[in-house]
Length: 435
Image (cartoon, rainbow, N blue to C red):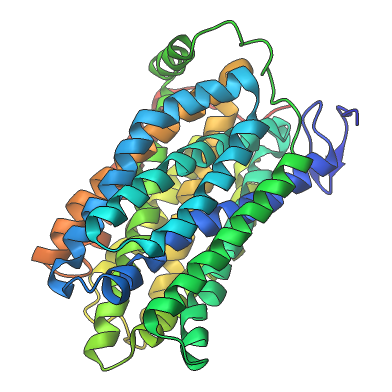
């Protein structure tokens, strides 16, 4: 099927060579990719408690160990996978990544010790590195620049819906299986294996519907992976706006891991302290998490609309400010079941998605067309460092200060990035979206 430079998907102008079917396939894949990547972290407290019986006083450190294991793999592989996407195309890497994490979902609940769980998380991380890098690259390839903010906003909304599907539907499956007479352990296993089935199905759809060869995939085949990675680094050093995009990736992934990992752990421990069962505590955590994602998915298209009309660095200043306030006020809350918590979670959810959308739109605008995979690989490398920072310091603070401490920490980091973004906005010429 031949692409048309003027093709559109509703109000979104598509890039040359991208068909409506390619764009729809990407949106479907984006929905389930983020759902399935985030759901593993959300279910992790259930595995630590119900499957392995790790004492609650040690679960913060176990969370740190598992998160660090994944991010070390991400640090090592996201750059090569981004460069590989420039060499052989996006579709192969994206599809393989989805199938890989599907195998990880099969194995995760079968781990019989923390050591085995770490090994399984290491395996899962290889697929996560493929998906995290190439999904951002396909997003950058799909629209014309005039519609980049809108597509990023729509994608962010779908990703938020995907996360909500994970926490509002999938997270309730253990409770459902428990009511059918299964033990906590088996209920968790069945839930993970349903996640694996969704991974394999999404991989098949992506293979059938994504663009056969990503933008510039053929033109970069003669360059080595190391040369392509170096190009991504040098481009960021020469362009302050692209460097800000890398920094935004650092904090955006940190935002995600704090809410995705530590919020469910906090809610589970608080729920168990109140006498709730593990599945019931997980269901309550999922409902509260869903409030945050609902706010984000409503706010996402609005922010995307702004991204296509204002200088994108200006919107990053706004995004970081919202996130800083949202994470700080949630972190300073003593009782996660307090009546005012839903409103706080709404602000946090809007801030979380704002950082993701603003950073992706800026990266897509600033990345050279022929080296988008390499640039997104460097951005994913920065994101992996952000996750390691958040899981390590956040896990220590969770165990030694208070459950809300990781949220206060990441709120402060968002505030610092907001200051840097303001400096870049004042120090560089105004750039409006074009194309």
